[in-house]
Length: 328
Image (cartoon, rainbow, N blue to C red; front, top):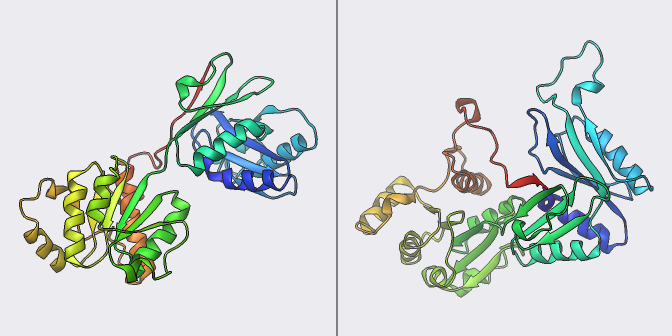
């Protein structure tokens, strides 16, 4: 997806180095990566992303380098099984992929995408599927020009994760959340906690009562609230406000005994059956990092409408893929 490689694209563009993009725009069977998967290849030989998970990336990189050297943009058909030796098994993901290889968007489109991602605003990006493979950008997909067959990707705002309590665990959760592209806010009314310096720069840290902050910043069904303060005066108020709001996932840290006491204190609170406690999936870990991973795993599963069990025990599709379409 564009979001996965955009920081790489932007950094090279600002340094004056050309970048080519390779985008998976069609496939005639199963594959390891969803449609819209993108590789970014810079003129200095570095690259990020993938279109297949690993089996054809070397071929795609060579095609992108040719485009950077002056070759025309084109749609490259690639079949993983095509490059096997006669005695090798054909991989399960042997479908023919159509990979659009072209220069990264020109400055007006590049700047519009960069600004939307920086300000966490939704944006829709289209790229033509026929020469001259024009890029376009608009606030929504229906505002993109429809004068050519195009591949369209909607980049929504990031899901929000609100952590109540600026604790050592909150710092680890916020750090691990960075590559998950969650917009993390850590809210705590205690000056010594918000000023600890332990929280990563990527997290928004606010000194406030979390329940009051949630009232001023309503959340949506893809967002989550997790209480981590271990202080009932903070956690209980936060839980009541979160359950009364629109957050899709509300969880509270604590042992089973602590959670039983919490449920007794909050008895009669509307929506209490939605509260996930103790927070996290059962990973059996004890360290801060393992606890943070458990909490975030539940946040991701809930955001994608999953229970968070083992893949070997599930028959559901492995991934939940974002909205990407071809039209025109």
